[in-house]
Image (cartoon, rainbow, N blue to C red):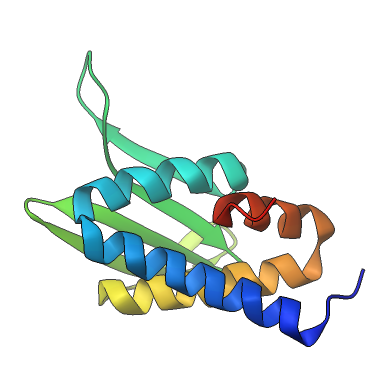
Length: 131
């Protein structure tokens, strides 16, 4: 299934715009929203990080895309992002990256994933509310 250039641009702008709008509004609420949304859209690739014994509080998420694992986690009053290079299940290199860079790279990776598969395209459309 081939999308037109305009449709691909809408998806690209939709992902980046949705992520940056939510991040700017409220970081804690953003983290909860994106973690749960990614878990619903890409359950096999997403691990939601929680803490608390009786009341689980979302503190972050990990998303495996290709050979990279992205992690966004609440650390006190700020968000911290890391990117790890994974080879055969082992993290060879983990770098701290700015949150904005993490969101940008996630946007690009999710767009590429959607272009490769109709199932992933549908999941991304649900993530953006375009379905």
